[in-house]
Amino acid sequence: TSNMIFKTIDGQESHAERILIANGYRDRFVNSEAINNGTAIADRVNDFSVIVLSEPLIVKNRVRLLKPEEVNGIIEKKTPIRMIGMSRHDATQVIDGVPRILEGKLIKPEDAKIIFDKYYLNGNEYWAPKGAKYTLGPINLVLSPGSGHGCDGDSGAGYFIQDGEEKIYIGPNGSHSVGVPNCGRPAVWGEYGNVQNIEPAYNHLDLITQAEEIASQKDLNWKAQLEAEAKAKAEAEAKAK
Image (cartoon, rainbow, N blue to C red; front, side, top):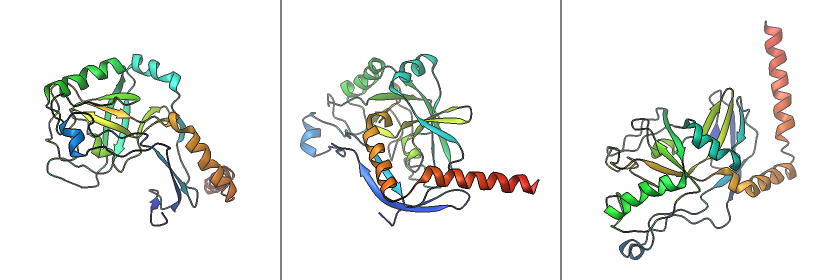
């Protein structure tokens, strides 16, 4: 894990001290028998992890986690949901490192199911046989055509809501998507709609608590250190004026 280096735009660096993986995590279940008989199709389970850094990185914007009780209101208000990704993987496999903003909105589970059913009943999802089974994600996002696609977020920061100066972090890509030009699929938008799952961070608060305990045990008191650095920076800027 020490080979994983994290850098900020202004030159801060840290490496991965520990990587914590959610209990029950299962990668894509894509063995040929399961796909051919329609019993499973490319679902991830509990696809969530937390990286404990060796050194704190100063976060300029305030970030908090989405609360489960906020989801219905966000769906009703059609609040924009975004992800910023640094690479693009499409039919031409272009990887240019240019930031792209993917945008969409959360939809009700029953609306997501209607779209998923249309793809799987008709057998025109990219890798699905007709009638293959699938699992809906905990929450689901319908994408705005032309805004980007899932693989644009591979090196991004997950889905979030920008609320003034505060970011509300929702979570990373979830188990599956349909109708989205993604990772080598034809770069066109699906005829029934374009839906991706999100694995909400609020389902993994135990993992976040565990990470905080590890940081505390290693005397990585990030909050105090960041507050001290922010204070010193503010004082230096004040003197410069």
